[in-house]
Length: 222
Image 1 (tube, rainbow, N blue to C red):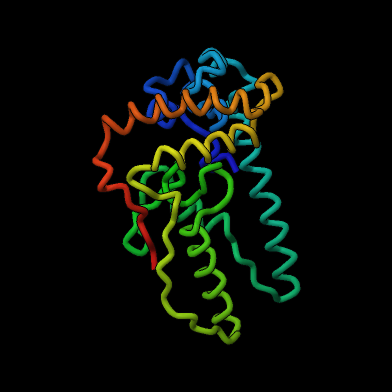
Image 2: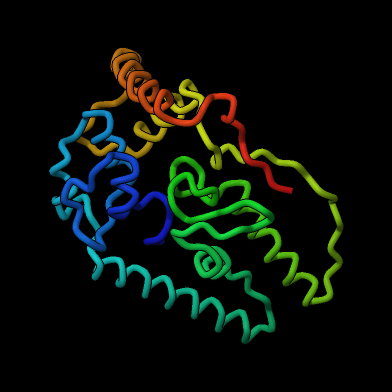
């Protein structure tokens, strides 16, 4: 849970904001906090506020609790002769912050690394493919019949060289609205226009310094 793309470390924060703004070494803040600072809706000092940061000890506590719960699930399943699809291990032991190839696509657990959707929590098409392969492997091991559905070309909208600015605006405003803290006003139509204008300005500047728009294609998997 502490390694999902929703949580940003210092490298992520620098990558998106150009500075860590004092985020402690080993600490993790949230995607929504980074977006709020990016949009000028929050002061960068929030990265020094414990209410917006998980320190190393807190991350270890959460991770250990997840491991304990997974161990219980494995124990109960084993006692009943049942298989367990360990999605946690399939994703976080095979992939990390540094990209690893899967089906010819470099994937990582970082934001926009191809394994998580834009909200940083839900799995992308690529992650679903990893999990599907895990289930298929277990099904075969238990002599279950697996139907070959054939290859599918499925564009993954969360693994791109570049984003269309309009799409990015729509997605980010949706994410802000979904995760916004209580001190941030709701993105009602009037405020939405203001934030949309600000996002367009930010995104236009990024695009002008990035790859040509002709390269803005989704990376697909089989």
